[in-house]
Length: 145
Length: 145
DNA sequence: TAACTTGTAATCAGGTTAGATACAGGGGTA
DNA sequence: TACCCCTGTATCTAACCTGATTACAAGTTA
Image 1 (cartoon, chains in turn blue, yellow, cyan, purple):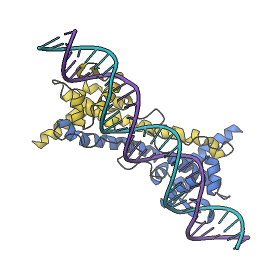
Image 2: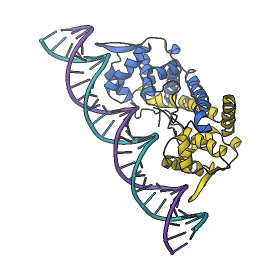
Image 3: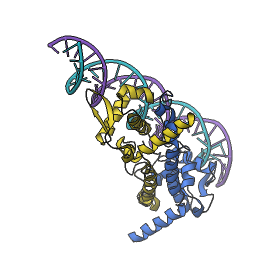
């Protein structure tokens, strides 16, 4: 089990589009950096577009950020690409036996904890922005030279 | 995507075994409360046993907790049933293009954040024990009467 | 018109999940 | 011993998700 790479690919896309903001970021170009095929990129940019994070137009090559990189948190990307539904990171076995004290209460007992855990995870993703990623990459690139 | 229900089933098993500690909790009995088949229960009790959380013996009906319920955190169950590997809750697209500044740095930039998010989730699971679940169920049961 | 792009649908192989069946081997009891 | 029930495993299946691939309609520009 693991969360779809759509999330990290989404981050990659937004970061690349911003870094290449003076150039043209076509789905083919982005796919070359991500190392996947352009269809997947278009599917994900479609989701990012629906979430208002990116601007793409049919027929016109190139994508641009719809907001400042400092305004896009990784949590926004995470939600945009729809990798995990609310309250559904953990799957819970359904129809436990209602004739058993554990069976009839376990879901109500455990769900709040699972939700809290999921929210804790999401909170961390809310503290980092695409701008942070860009700066981190810049630092790493500097270090190489 | 979601984390296998082995986790919540594991919690269910441990809770039920403790609540029924004066009785015999065979895999068949537990399966009746969880509402699944006994094979799955045996598979999971096997994992809980390997983690030292439960005692089961071949041929002998019934399982018992190997520790006090207050000593078993949900995090222990989570780790025991092996639903998520360390650092692998999020999958990362591999082989991004090394000729691109984003491609060659994105993994190193993003991984620490993903790890921190996963750890935040796990930390929450470390704060709740089977004892807490038992008490919560007791409260809920009282409220019914 | 021609060439290129985005958007989208459909298909495919690979992996995972939970359910089901089967059975070897341990353990208790008549 | 013979019998029965139990745990521990292995195997098979259907359902689902992921990512790769192909195909193509529709928008845009030259």
